[in-house]
Length: 91
Image 1: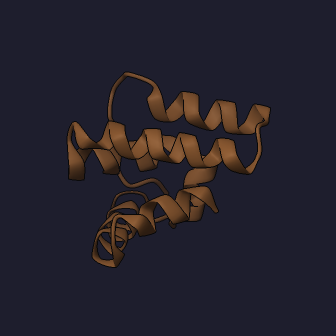
Image 2 (image 1 turned 60 degrees about the vertical axis):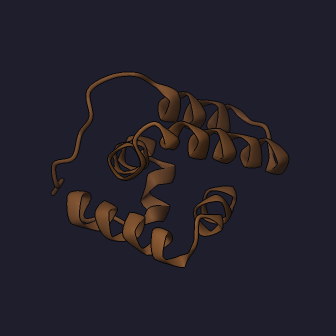
């Protein structure tokens, strides 16, 4: 829920752009990013550049309000990870 709310706070047109890019690149939905946060990270970095860090921080903050668990820690760690971007469609 925190991820959706954070993305919706950007505005419906931005939410749709993010959703479309995730689908175009990976054939997946935003909900699939819960298991593959690197999809969301790549799309946010492409669309927002440096501002993506602020968005990721907001997601992290909103996740902390919902529940603190090993899963959320892992999700946030992957969102904040430095490394190669992956924007190729998966099968």
